[in-house]
Image (cartoon, rainbow, N blue to C red):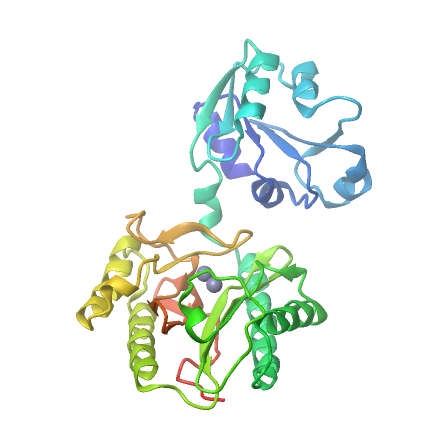
Length: 351
Ligand code: ZN
Ligand code: ZN
């Protein structure tokens, strides 16, 4: 909150209205599903509705709680919370059009100033507490991975394994899934973000599992590809390339390296092996209170990596109609390189 207030003092606008819930949580601690945070230079107010009266009083730090009943939060802002505010910053990437037009009309003559990455950039460098939550989420997911492996028997269905993952993550203390688990058998493993179906597992098929959980809101995000019974020569070959590419990413990642440069290093390696056209997504992404946050490890960002970034490294090769392999680890960028938060085997596993 302080960092944000210092920015405000530098004069872009008089106050900032934070509407994106992960940002509200990050700045104030509030975890409810309806809340806005109004940040002024020397004070802050969390607006929410009566359902969260007790919870907000308990959770919120650094801001006064203002319960809004019987009217909209926009109306509540207009009625007294914006005294001496002439320019109100809003989160351009997170405010929907209807809310924006209502705010503009109701708050007139306050001018709305669209801000980009006002909170995102700050969030990309993690505090020790945040890192330990991510690490705990990783531990739970890894334990679940080990528990799920023996369940990968001939005839089991994709959605059964997905349900086991969800159940077990919760059972071991996670808040819940970070995102619906991806479990894909056989040729379906080439669907980069495919959804678990009723498909049954057969010998010789790859099993791609991509899942994660949340601890105190912070996520893990891990992918492994294993094989039942045996792996075809073709799948073994692409497995080796993905594993080496991923290892390259893990060893090259360091503070100061532009995000797109790291992506290029790994991508060129896969291209040199002849599979460039089968790796069409970014190398990785930041993780924290959101599954995809800054920094983005792809052509989209040339920002240098910073110590304290927590990111995934997840190259993959996907052959349509044949199968896909992806290996994804969670890494913490440090001053001397990077630390792996995940410790599951990356070598080929045949069950
Ligand atoms: Zn993932
Ligand atoms: Zn990921």
